[in-house]
Image 1 (cartoon, rainbow, N blue to C red):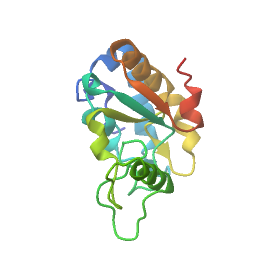
Image 2: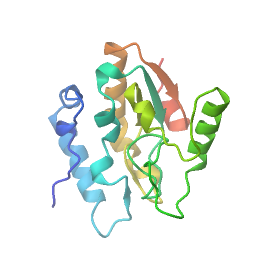
Image 3: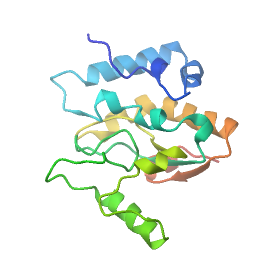
Image 4: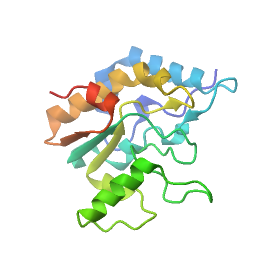
Length: 181
């Protein structure tokens, strides 16, 4: 079996403490799960392995002022970029922005933020962790990866609750089920 390129032990951006919190057995188990999910006989997994930890690479833990916690990545391979509710800055011709992103940007414009029509949320990552409760999904079976990522999402939230004064915005049922209380 080919080793995954999205190793928890190699998350950049100062998030190295996560691997220690999660333990070697969980890290290995999650990486094995992701390797088995990306075999040719299985439907596509989103986002690509190079983008799974994009939120952590973009937003170091000491910069986090807010966490927007979503459900799972967009199912379209051109939309899923590893940042909750965002898409890559340049989408291929004919690929539309998801309605949820459009609603977020429209609301931001109403509140006075300057958001151009083709905007993404990438600019927010300076102080906002755009995190999904499940960092991957299998196209057509979004619930398949949910349980595998739950300990990871819990560890991220616990770390931030202990080390920052971040505000949490829980968007979607799965995010709300994580129960920050």
